[in-house]
Structures are given as C-alpha cells and as structure tokens.
Length: 122
Image (tube, rainbow, N blue to C red; front, side, top):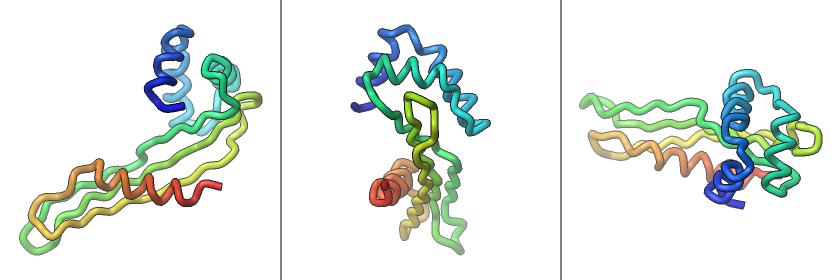
C-alpha cells in the first residue's frame, strides 16, 4: 500500500493525532508504542509498517575550490503490527556531487539512498 492510501485510511480511522505522536516518539526513542502501531496496522489491514526517516542532510554549494555536494542519510524501519517488534532496520546514504557551482537538489541524494536501501531489503 502506498503512502497516500495509508494517509487516507489513517484519516478515516481518526488516528492522525495518535500516529503523529507515535512518529515523533519513535524517532526520538526508537521504541515503538505497541498500542498505536496495532491500531494503525489494523486500520490499514497490514501485518507490518515500513517507516522512513531522513536522518541527516548536508548541502553545500561550490566555494570555487571544491565541488558542491548534497549528502542525505535515510533510515527505513519495518515494525510488526501484532507486537510492535522491529523486524528490520536499514540505513543508506546518498551523495550527489555535480560538476557545477550549485549543489544538487536534496531529492536526488534521497533517491540514491533509497535505491541502496531497496537493494538491501531482506
């Protein structure tokens, strides 16, 4: 299920505030709230949820002596709906360094990190 369909179902189930709180708390603690993940998983009709997070973004234009660079670190975590257990977690880094004066758009580096993670999914 794609993100837009999941957002629609979470809205229909009146779980937006609980999901937002879950995401905020999980990103800072790494500990999933099993009650919320179970409610959201049931509303979505799934066994697990993959949550992506951008961990770090660095973007620097050329100073005339060095090439510009855009660097992004992304983490995906799969969480089981029944028990809130982290089933797997992968981190990838995307680096885009064009031969120009302006750094590449952030999305270009995100796509590179995403591709690395997708190729490593168990």
